Amino acid sequence: MKKTVRKIVIVLGVLTLTACAGSGDGTLAGSGVSGSIPSNSNFYTHWIHSFEEQNGQKTPNIFRTKGSKTFPPSRFRMEFGFDPNGQCNYKYLSPVDAHEMRDCVYTKIGNKVYIYDQAGTLLQHISFTLQEPAGKDTMRMTYGVAEPAKASAEAKETKKSVKP
Image (cartoon, rainbow, N blue to C red; front, side):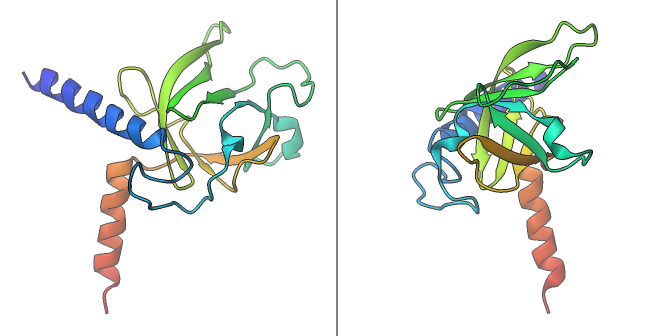
């Protein structure tokens, strides 16, 4: 019974987050509240990791739009595709080099992009934070985000401990 309830809660959570994602960059559906990254449609495209441009630096990760340049051969090159309705796909890093694009859903809250698999599990290792609004052919980001509910709780705790 507990497993069934947990699955229902996860699915409802993903559906809720997907509804928010479809409303646009950083604006929560119907709320009129915008996040810290201004709205722009450049984010909604297919992105390919251009790690050669990082000059040996780990962050920020630089992504280029598909077709914007020719990339040299690589054993693995991360890719994301995002549409305005909360659907996405990402390149799965296979342990046997059988890499493939996998479907996912996402929600974008401010500059945070939360990516979920089709079962509703947060893929924290590929969720990320935008460093600036996506440009016409460049996106700069760093991997890692706190879970939405956890991030909200941490912010409330910080406010309580800071009171004079």
